[in-house]
Image (cartoon, rainbow, N blue to C red; front, side, top):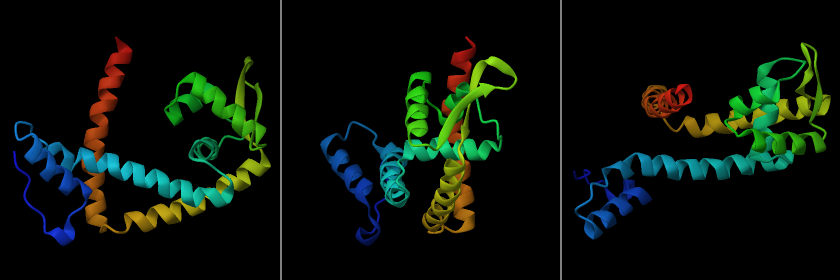
Length: 179
């Protein structure tokens, strides 16, 4: 399947890759690069942009992700590590390391779970709450600036299509976990 040519002034790196792969391997349909290639490329660019706007706060993505997850939960008692693991899409070992780092930075603390003395919860410190608030405000503003390069209708269409792709993975994972 051939991808429609794009004016040179509108072309991006994926357009070039599609042409090059089409010439190098005409036996392979590289149409997927028009979508999946761009998603991967955008992911890389977005991660760099996020790192740039988090840097003035002294944050990396992993620390930011944890503290804003705790903020989003809105529970002053915090969350159990298993809930954080699920919310941040990490393994339990990776979450333990992340909690250790955030705790060493003084942004969160482990406390006994008030509902189960055998368990612990992770909660933001006052410093963590303040930093999460400021960093999330900046993150939201910068993310909006990027998203606003598309009209509201384009954003809704893209969100619907990306949801469809993401759900295909989530449904597959969920069905694998039930087996």
